[in-house]
Amino acid sequence: MKILVYLKQVPHQDARLDISSDGTWIEESNIKFEINSYDTYALEEALKAKDSEGAEVVVVTAGQDRVTQALRTALGMGADRAIHIKDEAVDASDVLGVAKVLAAVAKEESPDLILTGLMSEDSGFAAIGPMIGEFAGIASTTAVVGIEREGGKLTVERELEGGNLEVVEINTPCLVSVQTGINQVRYASLKGIMQAKKKTIDVKTAADLGVGDAISPKLTTEKVSVPVKGETAELVEGSTDEIAAKLAAKIKELGLL
Amino acid sequence: MTKILIVSEIQNGAIREATYELVAIAQSMGGEISSLVVGGDAASDAEQMSQKGGGTVYVANDAALANYNQDAYYAAVNAAVDAVGPDLVLFSHTSAGWDVAPRIAAKLDAGIVTDCFGIAEEGGNFSFSRRIFNGKMEQKVVSSGGPVVATVQAGAVDAFDGSSEGSVTELSVTIGDTRTTFIENKSPEAQGVDLTKSDVIIAGGRSVGSPEKFEEVINPLAGILGGAVGASRPVVDAGWLPHECQVGSTGQIVAPKLYIAAGISGAIQHTAGMKGSNFIIAINKDADAPIFEVADLGVVGDLFEVVPALTKALEAAKG
Ligand SMILES: Cc1cc2nc3c(=O)[nH]c(=O)nc-3n(C[C@H](O)[C@H](O)[C@H](O)COP(=O)(O)OP(=O)(O)OC[C@H]3O[C@@H](n4cnc5c(N)ncnc54)[C@H](O)[C@@H]3O)c2cc1C
Ligand SMILES: Nc1ncnc2c1ncn2[C@@H]1O[C@H](COP(=O)(O)O)[C@@H](O)[C@H]1O
Image (cartoon, rainbow over all chains, first blue to last red; front, side):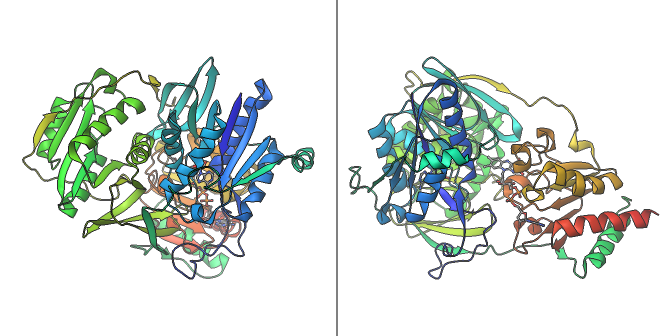
C-alpha cells in the first residue's frame, strides 16, 4: 500500500505576526515555522497504517527552501520519502493553482490513499484537499476523526457541527482530510532522525510535473491587515495584585462568590 | 448583470439559517439571484426559498440527495451551474459546504475563497474579506474575471428576512453510482460533566500546557467559584481533558453567568460556543487576541500570574 500525505509548513503557533512591507502577507523573516498541526495528525494516521500493515508513506509539500525542515521532521517521524515542489510561481499562485500542482504529484504517484489536513492554519481555506481529489479523479471526504479500512473501502467518521458525526463509506483510492484529535501524534525519535538523513527528498518544479502553464492565479490578495476591532473588552490594568483585586470585586458584584 | 447561484442547505427538515445569510449577501450585491435546493423531497423547501429571496429556485429531488453525499451533491450543483452560468457560486462554510465547494471550483477551473465574512462586487469583480491565522489577521482577496466559488462563515451577516416573488423549476440531475455511501448520523453521547448546567466556567487553552498545569492553575479557581473546567479544542485533542470539556462549534455551546477564558486566542470556532455567556473575562498575553472582541473584561497578561493571583484574591474575599 502507498499513502501520500500532503503537509504544509506554517508559522509557529506562538510566532509574533507582523504584516510584510508590501502589505499582502506577514513578515516571514525571524519567525519560527512548524508543520501545520492538522497535517501532523494526517501523517500520524499514515504512520499508524505503516506500523500495523506495512505501507510506503510519501510526504509532499510545496514551498520555499525553508520547508525542507518540515520534510526532514516528517522523515524523522517515519515517512519513507519526500517530494518538495520548489517553484516561486507555485508559491505565488492561488488555491486553485497550488491544488493543480499538488494533484499532479498524486497522478504521478497513484497512491492507494491520500491524506491531507482539514485546513492550513495560516491561510485556512480547507479547500486544497478536496480540490486535489477532484483533479486526481478520486473521491474525497473531509474533517475526519476516525478511519477504518476493510478491503477496497474505508469507513470514516466525519465531524459535523455541534459535535455530531456522520459515518460514511468511501471507495479507495480516495483522499481523506483529517481533523485534529484523530490520534496522538508521535515525536521523531533520535534513531528516526538519524535514519532520515539517508532518505531522499525529490525536488521538482511545476514544469517537471507538466503543469507549468496552468498555475497563473485567478485571485490575488490585495491586503492583509490587523482586524479592526468592533466592540472590545474593557481592559483591567495595574499590578498583578491590583488586577486580581479588581476581577475579584467584579465577580463578587455579579453575585458569584 | 452579475449572476449569483446560492447553494442552500436543509437541516432538520428546513432551510438552514446560514442559507438565508447567503441570500442577504447576494441581495446586497444586487445581482440576478438563483438558488439550488436539494433533498429527498424538497418541494416545500424550494417553495419557501423562492418566497424568501432565493430568486429563480432550482430544485433537485432524489432519494440519493436525502442525506449529504459528496458525489450526489456535486452532480446537483453542476447541473445548477450549467442551468445558470453563474459569476459567483455561494455556499455556507459548513461541513457540507467545505466538502463539495472546492470540488466544484476545481471542476469549473474557478478561483475559490472560503470562510468569508463579507463579499462585495464592483464592475464585475468581487472582493472577499476573511480572517487568516486563526482569526489573528484579516485578508482581502480580489478576483479579476472568471467565475468564483465562495463559502461564507455561518453567522457572519444577518439572515435575509424579507419576502420576494421567485419561481421554482425542477432540475433533472443524473446521479450515477456514488463512490461514497452515507451510513448513519451519530450524536455524541452525553456523559461526564454537562458544562451547560454550570453557572461558572473557567476555560483554559493550549497555552496552559499540560494536564498538570490545569490541575495546578485552572482547577483551584474553578474550585473556589464552584465552577466547571472548560477547554479549547487543542487541550482535548492532546488528551489533557476529556471531550465533554470542549467548548465551541464542535464541542458544547454554553452560556454561563461567568466565563473566564485563560490563554484562549478566541478563534471563531471557540467563541461560537461561549459568546452567549452573561459575563466574559479574558486573560491573554497578546493584546490583539480576538478573544478580547467578545469579552466584557480583559487582562493583557500571563495567565500563570493572573489566575493564581485571582484565586488568592477570591479566597481572601471569601474569608
Ligand atoms: C471545523 C473546526 C472545528 C473546531 N471546533 C472547535 C471547538 O469546538 N472548540 C475550540 O476551542 N476550537 C475549535 N476549533 C479550533 C480553533 O480553530 C482553534 O484552533 C482553537 O480554538 C485554538 O485554541 P487555543 O485558543 O487554546 O490555542 P491558540 O490559538 O494556540 O491560542 C493560544 C493563546 O494563548 C495565549 N497565550 C500564550 N501563553 C499565554 C500565557 N502564559 N498567558 C496568557 N495567554 C497566553 C496566546 O496569546 C494565544 O492567544 C475548530 C477548528 C475547526 C477547523
Ligand atoms: N503548500 C502546500 N503543500 C502541501 N500541502 C498543502 C499545501 N497547502 C495546503 N496543503 C494541504 O492542504 C490542506 C488544506 O489546506 P488549505 O486548503 O490551505 O486550508 C493542508 O492541511 C495540507 O494538507
